[in-house]
Image (cartoon, rainbow, N blue to C red; front, side, top):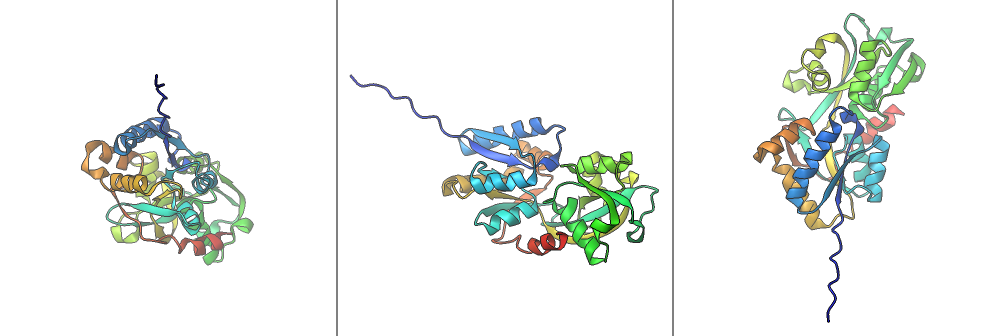
Length: 274
């Protein structure tokens, strides 16, 4: 008599999101993304939010996460260690963005008036929320450690901008479209805080541009699964539910294939921010 051996459960595909998306609606976004990817990949999918950018990179490198929606510097760090970035986001037809250093409306801060102010940043690995603004300040002869009386990290763009609005901080960095789009820093703020929120802030300066966020895949993911994920992400715009995910989770219009070693230039920005 034969014995029926239970079929081993298929391991879940683990997809991680960055903390910069904020906690508001995070579980709902994760559930919708998980359901969509599960149907596309034909296997269970778990979507989680990493506590920090550092944890996001470590989870990818260790294989605790199979793939992630990762900010540019995490893409650069993991790519340099042999991980492939499958796709990157496209916004307003552009695959790059810049940062804006902003303050409260009416504060009238300039680079020359930053002495003895405070800064609210997102994360040490956040490109628009820390690396680009700090690199820009140093290029202008403004040393953050000697200029700001305090610098702290809020883990999200919402947190940093809200600290500026509340008066807990004087300046923050936020992502915004490149100059060629004709859009201002307000576009980035309103992505985070809602319509007309840009009116509550003033621009101090814009930075250089950086590549958009991407989706790295861990080295232990089978090529067939990585290929299926890549095809799924590239085709998100073909379905209404995919279009909603592009807007609510990725803040992108579509994905495009990421060029090999496309994030290498960010190491110069990272070194400049040290």
